[in-house]
Amino acid sequence: MNDTLITVFHTASYFIIYAFFGWCLEVVYQAVEHGEFINRGFLNGPYCPIYGFGVILVCGALDPIKENIIVLYFGAVIMTTALEFITGFLLEKIFRQKWWDYTNERFNLKGYICLKFSLLWGVACLVTVRLIHPLVTAFVEKMPPKLGLILLSVILIGFLSDAVITVCAIIHIRNKLIITERISADMRKLSDAAGERIFSGVEYVMDKKTELDNKNAELRQKLDGLADKYKKLSEERDITLKRISKASPKLSVDRKAELKERLEKLKSEIMSK
Image (cartoon, rainbow, N blue to C red):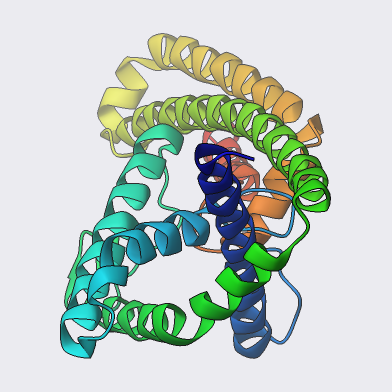
């Protein structure tokens, strides 16, 4: 292989290795935190791409100054914090939800980043650049080129296939979220209408009984329509949605239980009048 292919091979290998290491780190953290196995990340396979990108970025930019521990540490803190902020921001814009939320942590910025984890990322990068990456580099360089290319090709094909499938599923989930938001908004309108009727005066109700009965019928008709939409939404089985909900507990992707509760409450309010 020529120098360009070797560089590409090494970079891709580092990405896969550190994406896997990052996934392992997340799984261990969740096991300690929740006492169970949770497949973290938005992909189905055992890899978290943000870790792969992060380590490549940090090692590529900071390797020349790795002997200066202080500069290396603060450089890693800045770079990983910027990566986490940009990734969190883009995911929220695309998916309309936060994939992680540091709002309850002190010194956070819009919930995307916080001081505690930024400092921890700095420590992790310090250990990686000084201790882990030299070992990974030696492993990759000693790997037979043909065997390495075969393994890397198989893994990358699986990774890209997983990414395409997951992105398509996320787009579908995003559309379902838009539908649930519309249903929720319609429920809110019906609830407001019911509330106005409940708090209207008794004399007004007696004078406008016919008009009120018509409004009741209209509200109930709209309620039946919302119930049909909810039933159709509930019947859809989405394995990716369930896995993502478990992987990112703070990500509110499945709101069917919330919609059901609001629908039943609204139904009882309207039907009782």
